[in-house]
Picture (cartoon, rainbow, N blue to C red):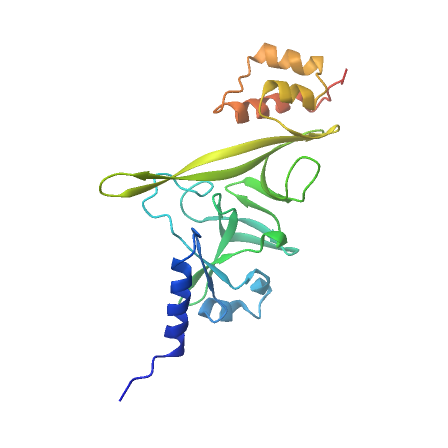
Length: 242
């Protein structure tokens, strides 16, 4: 007599076949039937339950694609109007997915958040905000690297993926790719050079003096610290725009 194959096995096999044909780097599974989902579906945390589970797929990579440490960190999240404190959270810079970990009595689940519902979150006191498209910045998650009374510095953090081939193996590598933006009384500006910084302040003589007096450099590895230093020296007093 032929044994019947359980329905869930057939469904899992079908999903696996479709996944193998895709080029996605992170695996997305429906989790609505999981123990964790059932545990929270009638609580205030239910708003987080998108139904999409997150499964790590970066083992053996040279560098981590996550912001900060490779593991989850406890932080604060504002999601769909609800504030969650001391929640386990991580930010995948390659896929641009914000992920939280939920626990029930006997299980844990990594859940992908709906980006449209994320207002802001913090990881190790680093704050990230969800910006809707303006004249310069595209919609998405940005780190708020500096905030003063007149100016703010936002960093769009992403990762590029590289595969290194050898005779015996393929090694995965992730390299950071950051874009910097300043918002002030004059608007929003993409800033990656001293010239673009000067333009953001209408070629202010005060800003030029700060750059010269402090020997601030804008090389690839120093631009972020340079911008933070400049803004901290500019404020709290406001630049007089020529």
